[in-house]
Image (cartoon, rainbow, N blue to C red; front, side, top):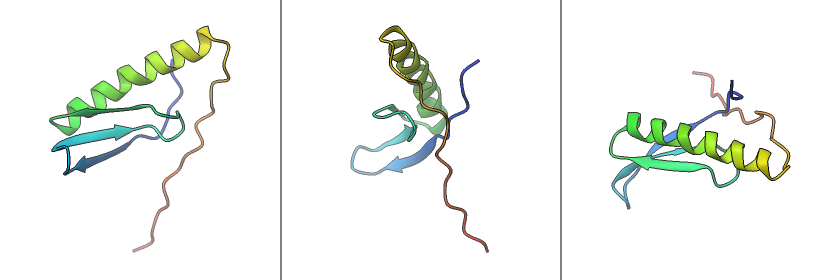
Length: 72
């Protein structure tokens, strides 16, 4: 089972697509035409990122990123 990393998901107007980004995994991001597609693609990218890091003997970051919550 993969660690549970925070995923940022947002619309990026200049490229006209949804972006999904995992802040704890440097340069791990993906895009899609829908939010669901971007999330599915970033999950694939995360698995591959973790596999490459493990194969290269690099440390696997612990999930640490937590978005700032603003009280209403």
